[in-house]
Amino acid sequence: MRITLSTEEARRLALSQQGLIRKHSFGRGKNGTLKAIEHLGYIQIDTISVVERAHHHTLWSRLPNYTPKFLQDLQVKDKKVFEYWSHAAAFLPMSSFRYCLPQMKEIEKKESYWFKKEKKLMDFVLDRIKAEGPLQAKDFQTPEGYNSGPWDWKPAKKALHHLFMEGKIMIKSRKGFQKVYDLTERVLPDDLDISTPTAEEFCEHHILNTINAHGLAEEKEFCYLRKGIRPKIKATLKKLEESGEIISIQIKDASKYIYYSTKDCLDNMPKKIRQKQLHFLSPFDNAIIQRKRIENLFNFNYQTEIYLPEQKRVYGYFSLPILFGTEFIGRINPKADRKTKTLHLDNLVFENGLDEDEIVKPLTEKIVEFAHFNKCQQVEITGNNGNNFLEKIEDCCNQEL
Image (cartoon, rainbow, N blue to C red):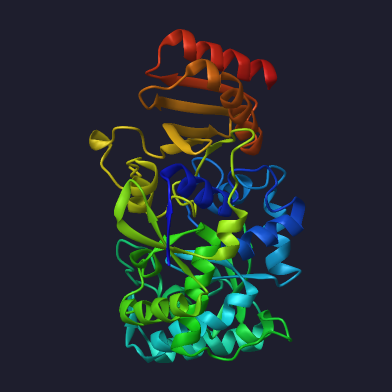
């Protein structure tokens, strides 16, 4: 049996499961933070800090009272989350550790992973951590005259990277943004299931977790940045559909795509939106990380311009999509000046047909919240929607701040 949804229904389903339609979908505080991570499956980590880092931004978008201390405590004190590689560096719920084991074992077999492995150096680094306890890359001296090349990765840092990817060591905590490594057995909670899943168990876990996080997903999305997995995913999808655990879906205006969902997700889909929420989403937010999905479901073409030369940027270095209700209504390029405590919002651009009167209040509220989140006390806005509109928003924000 195949179910047909309208585009609007598909959007409500997707955004509801992402926790972006209702306020406090995951609750509040540290418990809400853990619930969000467990539901979303991962939170991507990124080093860019023109505003608060991506992992904190993604959680804040779903938990208005979020603070970075919640995540730190969950990792260090409670051992409820850990860092590893999802499709990128990420925080994952501790229950997902066993599903990382197949990847760790595959990497262990390889002669290189980003860099050629130096076994003697890896043994030396591992022995020091065993004997001395948690260490950082800076605790290992670089040999005199060593030229690390353009990436500035000294030998010990490469060894730490390999040991981490193989699962021999884990990131116990961070000092600032610098990683502190310890032996895996000293970081994991004692009662954790560390049995290696079969390929079928892994695929079932991955498919059901993805659907639970996103509401609906198509076959390509389950394989996103995972080489060689598609045949197993395809076979598992067929099995799950035949058993009734997943349901195939067609969207009226996107009939060439077949999506999959579950009865629970469909039952939880909001029938309507009582109050539209406005969000500035991180470029690495779970809801938009697959750009083709956003184009297909929301008719919004979003690409981050971080990696483009300045002369080729249209919207700005760290342009963020603006979500209002179930529509992406524009983009904004933010930068938090920590010295002057000013939040600069450059190149505020809206899609055609926007009702400016409808968004004045929610946009002002979100900018004020975003400024507080980034520890800023004033706002400066530039854009292409006319000086009167932008001045009105800027004045409202600064009065609130």
